[in-house]
Amino acid sequence: MAENRGRRDRPSRGPRTKSRVNAGERSDAGATETRRRSSVAAHRRVVPPSDMTTALAEWFANSQRDLPWRRRPEPYRVWVSEIMLQQTQVATVVPYFERFVDRFPTPSSLAAADEAEVLKHWEGLGYYRRARSIHAAAKVICDRHEGVFPTDFDSVLALPGIGRYTAGAILSIALNQSHPILEGNTIRVHSRLFAVTDDIGQASTQKRLWECADQVVRQATRSGVPPGTINQALMELGASLCRVKQPACDDCPVAKWCSARERGIAESLPRNDRKSKFESRREAVLLVERRGKWLVRRCGADERWAGLWDFPRFDVTHAPCDASRLSAELEQRCGLRVSLLDTGWSHRHAVTRFRIELGCWRATQVDGRLRVSAEDRSRQVEWSWATRGDLEDLPLSATGRIVVNRLERLADSPCD
Ligand code: SF4
Image (cartoon, rainbow, N blue to C red):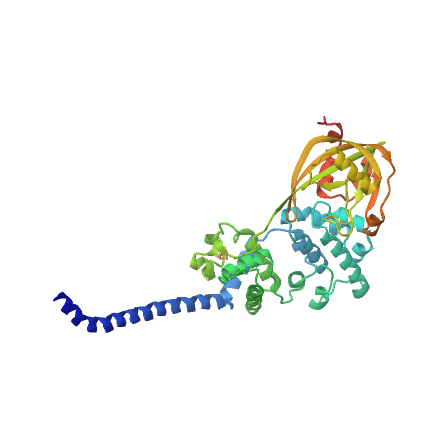
């Protein structure tokens, strides 16, 4: 019976089952398609509503920080601030900005300065390539633009050290020209607002994010919000509420238009498949003293701190760090023979992708004469003896300055 029922049922069950499966498949496929379409729609929703840009501008008017470059947003000052803010926190930049524009108030005054003085005003900010670029760009402004910061996008983009973001930021903030911007904070904000779930390391994702940024600026302009205001508002939002971890969506002025918030994926965006890889290094710095002067070297053009001064420094990551080896390396580099003692003091710090443990050695010259090799000369390396006062005036690496600040203690410290 069962078999028969089974047999009887089979023909009818077959098609019905098949029909159910098909219906189910159609139903699942339909739901999947609906989800896909809504996801695609969310992804492609790059035209923001005018309410959103107005709400963001109002929030910015009430929440923005009082920053010196905002008080007088002239192209030169905005440029200096934007270059300083690359890779550096606002609170760190403020005193550097004020000292810099006080000493170099115009492109002409900056162009006329020695590189050493520019680097001295940058000392401690890090990423010294920025200082050399801004100095070089000031010279271009004097040569090609009669000392006046250019106001057309292509001319700004042609200046050393200026890319699409910086050109757009300067011209939108200082002159309210309609240019989109995309940097760390705005990448995060746009990724979330428009639920851009693709890897931001991909060129196609970057292109989409620039489109999002462009649409927001255009919509703001149509709504009567100046481009400079909306761009700064987006950056401020990224710096304050739309932070990397635990974004403050409940307080966010654009929360009701935010696709990532709606989908509960805000904290997972932006997606970055390229994880930063840090590299550990060990280095040794040598305090070589002779008659109250200290041996220093100006870093070569191809080095980490090009143009800045530093104490002799050696990479000891892959070899035992002992006095005889360091002494031999110093003699090979500059002709001086020294006897060395480990101070026992060490300092951990980070430079770009490197995590460095720096050890410090005291040295006494026993023989030899200071000489500069042909290789050092070709790399613009200089060696010199510096008094304590010279050390205050020279532009030094960040860790060089830390060592100078504890020079007396290190010079008198008990050794191993
Ligand atoms: S709602 Fe949240 S995730 Fe979306 S923009 Fe605002 S702070 Fe960022």
